[in-house]
Amino acid sequence: MSELVGEAKAELKQASKEVKESENVAEKYSAMTVSKNSEMNMGDLTTVLSAVPTHKPVKKQIQFVEDKQEFSRFPTKTGRRSLSRSISQSSTDSYSSAASGTDSSDDETSPRDKTQVNVKGSSDFCVKNIKQAEFGRREIEIAEQDMSALISLRKRAQSEKPLAGAKIVGCTHITAQTAVLIETLVALGAQCRWTACNIYSTQNEVAAALAESGVAVFAWKGESEDDFWWCIDHCVNTEGWQPNMILDDGGDLTHWMYKKYPNVFKKIRGIVEESVTGVHRLYQLSKAGKLCVPAMNVNDSVTKQKFDNLYCCRESILDGLKRTTDVMFGGKQVVVCGYGEVGKGCCAALKALGAIVYITEIDPICALQACMDGFRVVKLCEIIRHVDVIITCTGNKNVVTRDQLDRMKNGSIVCNMGHSNTEIDVASLRTPELTWERVRSQVDHVIWPDGKRVILLAEGRLLNLSCSTVPTFVLSITATTQALALIELYNAPEGRYKQDVYLLPKKMDEYVASLHLATFDAHLTELSDEQAKYLGLNKNGPFKPNYYRY
Image 1: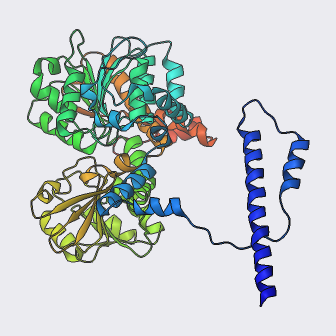
Image 2 (image 1 turned 135 degrees about the horizontal axis):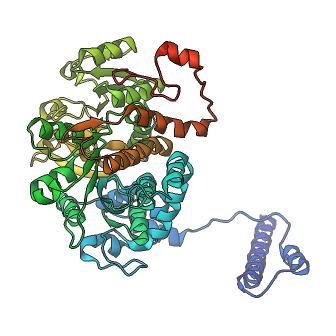
Image 3 (image 1 turned 180 degrees about the vertical axis):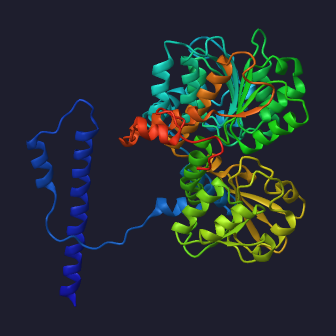
């Protein structure tokens, strides 16, 4: 027994010696590496390595005193939720936003309360933080690489300056792709003032980069409703600057100018509108005889409908849902309200991932298309209790009502892919008996008294641009179409366009498409004279009549 005790003491003594030697080695290594001017040579390295004991160490019980203190200070339930929310939110932010170095006090200050100046000494803008401009510039440069057709148009027309004298006021999503469009318009001779059409879709760093370059931008992510209209007003109402062209997305800018500044509105030479909601408003004005300027309906142009609406939504719907909810789609029951081009794109993506997709429709033609594409057409009330996800893309209002939301099962997801935020009756959810809990950026749990939760994304606003990003190449097609529409309306001789809403000329649609073919190294077949005569076409187009349905 005494021998065992003696061996144990010897081992303990040896262990103490090893610990001391290890500490000496650590101190020596630390002293050699921390010094800025010192360099470790091979001799030093050999000395360090030879000082490390090679015999078997003795197992010791390690006490994590510091860690225990840290864990004892772990946040309360409220604190844990805040921590989780912070981590989740950071996972949905862009790299440049995270790397921009803004502090929390800066984030809490409204941009309207700040005085900021760009490198040119101008303060005619209102963005989150002008210091983010460098990061925004990098994002714009990345977008330019996949918008070669728009850049090509910029280079071709830059010397002619077809928009010289144009004063364009714009209200669109302010993203890197939109920035490429704005800078193209400036390169073609236009002066621009810009604001955001969606309170959640602005990329703050991109807005800062535009402001730094001299564009008067009034937008930041997370605006209130009051901020939204304040930004529009500051875009329009400025001393010594009279807009003569409008580029709108949703019709809010047009509506504001028409209602509040009718004399300014009458002097507008043309409006270019790219959304279902905005086009609907224009047709209403035209029908009532109140539209006093010509307008171009870009939304229904072939290059917008068949590319942006379809392909953009096909890719971005999944991106938006994955980033916000981490949902797995295989086997999920999803209802897509509306089977237009946006609905078709969403359904194709969801079906490919194994979701069980249902369609609601008012149009028998679209409904028949859905049936022949393999989807079941239903009324929402028939399956509302069983669905996991509802996606609206109709451009209408109250597509999903409070009564239907009350009957949804726990954990259901509700979101909107149409432009307008009226498709889901969000206002009816802001009542005392329902609790709202923000769990991530643009993700709210709406909690019923019985504990049921419905997950609402982006407060019913446009999902893809509020919660994720969209494919740059597809946006290049739309942006090129918008630029050409502005050039056409601004340069059109008097009398060509009356006070009405027009579609983009077919020849222009084909030109936009041809600019983008080079990206795919695509080679068009040319008609022979005999073939062109047989079809009754010009060899250079347009190749389809206006009534043709692609």
